[in-house]
Image (cartoon, rainbow, N blue to C red):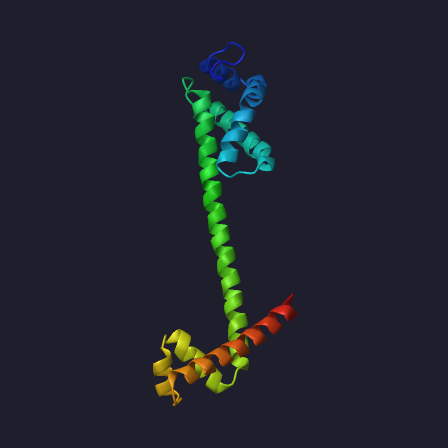
Length: 176
């Protein structure tokens, strides 16, 4: 693409700088499919490519007219670099948005779980807390809660967990 209609990049830049938009149309025709491929490989949807590409061309034209782009600039390299930068920023924004969405979901789940736990009786709460928050084994639970053996402690934890699951399941069915 370095030569548009037989013109060198510096001639194209001079034409744009002098107010001509024709070189921009030529650049768009010749470079759009490359831009789409580049953006696609970096996770940008094809439906976003026309908006992104037209923004890049507009920015390019503005920079040329404001003499922020030297006449000796390789137009292809310039556009590829701008598109790569856009794709990188877009990917970072998506990651940030996904992390924020996940944190919101986790916070909602924590609130629902806390409400469900509050419904449990005190003994069941204490058992589940000791098992999962304090990470006690069944022997330690048997000793703390005065069960005759670890098997009974395990059974009691499983009953409390089963009750918690039923409460949580009922709550989630009501929320949907």
